[in-house]
Image 1 (cartoon, helix red, strand yellow):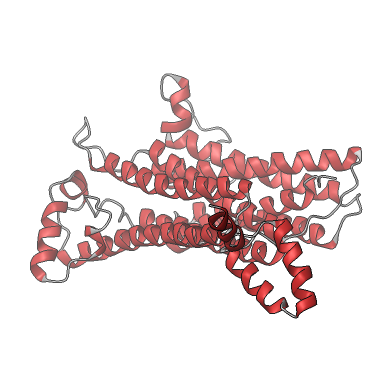
Image 2 (cartoon, rainbow, N blue to C red):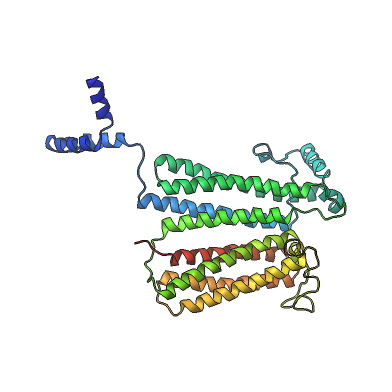
Length: 396
């Protein structure tokens, strides 16, 4: 038993035995043996600055894949392609139809659902192939996003590159990716169901669309914040009353930008961009007559296209105003160059985004311009998040 215990002790040397062995090995010229034993005793490495940079870059790449998914989802929505695939299989649907018979069978399945019966009853097979490929691309991209999160996470976990807090965060992000995929199918199902009124235009529920977009934005923000935290060293800011005010105002502005982007999901879900295509007035009035046409009044904010567009306009104007005030406040304070760049970039982007939104509205929502406007909301949200990260309080 004594010999067995000694053998185990040599195979897994503790700190004391390793220190004694190094001292003895230095005297006997056996430092290389010590190095070999130490390397064999630890299969993983602890997190350090180098591993943090690698993990941080991975998080930035992951957030970029989420951006791609959101943009591609917007294109799918604008081309009315989202209901072309009427079932969902994690593995089976990864292989697209390849023969004429397979395409005809897929088309026949689509013909059994409301979108074909009400809107696309004269659609040809070639036209169906286009919208099918659009939705297929979006779904395959979603699977790629999942792999981009999960596979490197397993590798880095095995390497021991995650701290305890980072392990919890990565587990949450990977779980959220899976949830996002399920939520996407739950959204699509709402557009495949028969409506009470057989003449209603088939579309996905705007509530589920907003939930799907909102969860994607949360996933994106959490991934980007994690990447920035690992890659950008914190800057010490003076904790004055002005800085505290600026920090709080920046957080509020970031929240406003997030809500404005999320309200765009209701605009898209109700095709609210196709009503009142004028600016700054809505038709001939500042406040349209049908703003509160639904009863109870609360329904208007989520189901009335006029109210939804009106809300999106107000939120957009509020975002422009908030960023402008934020920039004006920052001009009176000394701060690092990187922080000044973040504020200036945010100011330029919010005005560009407003111009894109107004142009999209006036031109009756052309697909390229609408996609650019949606992408601009992600850029604006990214810059707001970067600024909040720059202004965060550094723990002493």
